[in-house]
Length: 231
Image (cartoon, helix red, strand yellow):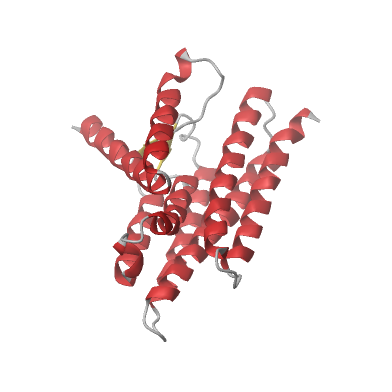
């Protein structure tokens, strides 16, 4: 039974992705916001399934493949649909611009395929992780709900450009910091714990837009470390 525990959380991730997609396409007033919330819930389940697999030693080939399929649904397809809906409501009628959102599931699939073939991404990631990218995309409507003056959401060209830039980061060769923890101890996971605490403080102060800020800081910090290491 122990080896199936991580897969249970992965299946909950899949459920969040599916329900999020249905909500994104629903006609209810807050459907898109619910879809964005579910990206965050899916990210929590994704974190727990990885953590439980490491703590329990419950690794399996099935779990690895199931995790990638879950990530494709919740962190590839769902954020792509969220961005499509944003572009659909802001672009002129008949515009092809909303289809710029297809780069999100496309590059997410490439990112996940590369991750499965790469054995050098245990302690860190190469390229922006799909959960972080999905949280960033999902944070935009939530930030707009909180701050109606968030002008990015009414500029379809900027949204399309942002989709392209962040999607390219998914398949970039930039080393990205990982929150993976092989144990619950403080000393060996100090950087991870400090990062989580800092993120929680930012989110508690800035609320929904805090998620946007956290992911931007995560990308900029990783870029800075990469430049320093190269130089």
